Image (cartoon, rainbow, N blue to C red; front, side, top):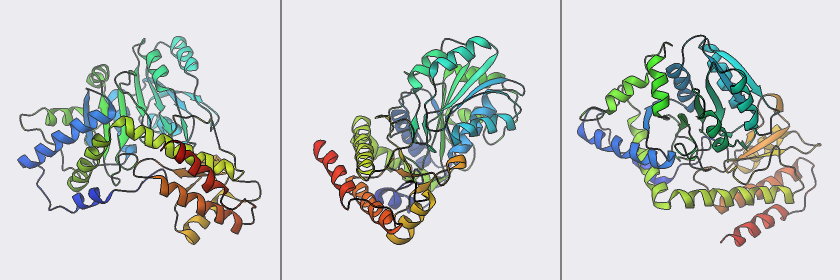
Length: 377
């Protein structure tokens, strides 16, 4: 029950156990073309999608390396640990970073982005997080995208934990580079990263002078646009075979139903947590479907809750990161989860809290979650 890596369906695991295929053979071309089309469905885009064998952070780095030149000015919007990562990557590549830094647990205000862009027309890009995994908060990407689209700046979004869990309309929301990874709501093991690249972003790629080799968008685009499309370098073949199955499962369920399932799982989790007398951390948003962040009660350390759940009850959750370590714990529910995963988690949480000396009403969390599931059945 972590925000990632998340559980993997048996069908995906079985596909990964298939015999190895050569990445220059016609069968690989067939598979990669299907995968890219299915990814476009999930990204809700008609743009090219570039794929790398890396974690999601690799896709974040690829966006910086391909879209800018040393000394370029960029606006980084941070509401948590992964927003801060945008700043660290940008600074590592010699970019001039203007940081909009918000209190962890709050949303970014699109009006602040509009003001920053008006104050400095030399800003070449705006980098933001969709679903901030460290706090469970989701930003208003649609409003931000409409603002950035009116300027020459490109809009780059980290949708690693949000894509496939919460609505993320890449094209309709004017997102120029949308990055994601395989190990969250896409129900596939870690190892694949993706970047959707718009026409506006490709113009930035053409003028970028930052060094890149493996993460070069042009190499990937050229390889994918051959008569027999390929990957420019050896891909993670087995993981791609698994991803192909996971994407078919999403298509069969439909994005609308996938989002609805995530919404109910998130609502049930939060209802259960509140029924135990615990307080949610951060801005509560009905569209935040990936992670529930919970404040640790004053008499218990958040890390102790995580340890008890894992050691005594076999349930792996996540603790707080950075400056909120020990103050919160995080429950992931993006990807391959159903109602009984949520109910088991809440039962384990009740017992863990009691074992750590914190009073709760036995069964209250489970009962509250059941009511949510019944109301949405």
